[in-house]
Image (cartoon, rainbow, N blue to C red; front, side):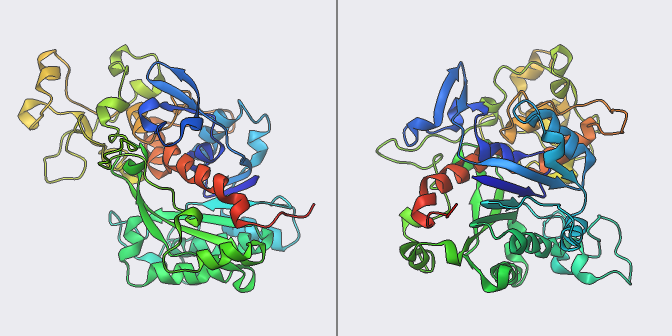
Length: 415
């Protein structure tokens, strides 16, 4: 299945949708999904590949492209050509002007359209954002449909151009609390191709329910091409309560008390940080790198330490400098007394620790030196692009659920 990825960032969604990556064994519920694991190595497993292949990716951030290409070039020699750097607005305009921008066909389109204008950590301007599609202040003469809060409309334009069987759009939970924004976006998406898509009710799902060691909640929109759906699937997806066998939202795998032991315990920070040395002892540049921002007091954001026996905090893009602490001093309220007694000092989370909380594989090289064209990834950049990403394991759960139900949803596409 040909997958077109928009607002791709460093590729958390893409990694999850393709599978064949390493993650913690505790993140995969082999009681429910024994076929998902193809290899075991200590605390780690390799998950099975899916039927999806990324044939196009896009983002506006050069550091995101540099990171994406550095990871995917191992399996995709043409990774640099697959990833298109630039604004989706400009890409759509070029495509409509006759340029060959997008592939001729895509079975599925995914995209985590920008969330700064919907996040509770931002100004929450939503659809009335005063930032342009390039991230700069919107000039009075610039069209309002090109503001950052309406970039989902340009994702809709791509859907209209390519008419995939399915699209999946993702954003922050805060979007659901902004008046009727969720309903407006769902309605607008449904108009792709001229009212050609059935958009099921958007739903917030929690990453920790799927083996991700993080308290991350995201809202997802699933849109199905009406003309491609089988009649029973169309009827089921139109119901207020979608029957389980047709539900595009994956069933939880972790954190639920179940007498039959079908579910696994939540994955904790302690689980996620297994075998990681302290930065001064690490060879991995991403484990060596961490923010040196000083402690600002408990009243400020990002001044708490992680709880090792629980899930980690939501890793956020704007968190790069004041990322939470791996360990606070006793003076600042630190709770990890045993570590402090061993002489381990106060420090913030490393880049690799954040990547682990987002379930990125350890062979993803997040710290990259600048090349001749200027592309590279600093530690500050790495925090940002990791915080922007969809957790790989969360995306894998979504992908495997869709993969299992694809032929139940859709008619056989004619060659």
